Image 1 (cartoon, one colour):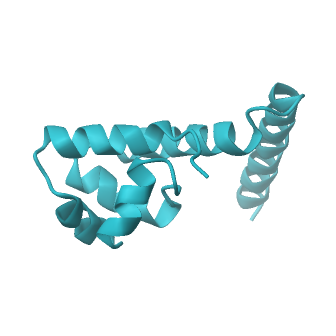
Image 2 (cartoon, rainbow, N blue to C red):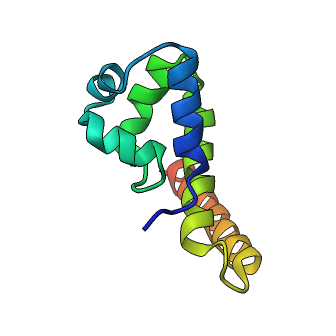
Length: 109
């Protein structure tokens, strides 16, 4: 099953732009070249542990790579569900509350 995978296409575009082989990139991020090929063609997903290597290799901001990965995963997993915006708003609201609570606890110590 092929999944929509904008980050895989992006990764392939950057790799080709830098004239790098699948094997070179795969070795740098710690996977085999067949896995990288599957990621580039939307047959597999880029995983979190691969991000640092991708960012380093292509001189990208780690933040940019992480944001694109999260966006891609959300689209693939939840993009077609009803109430996605409401769920994300709920998540962000709860996350903010947790951060504030943690910061308040640290201040009181």
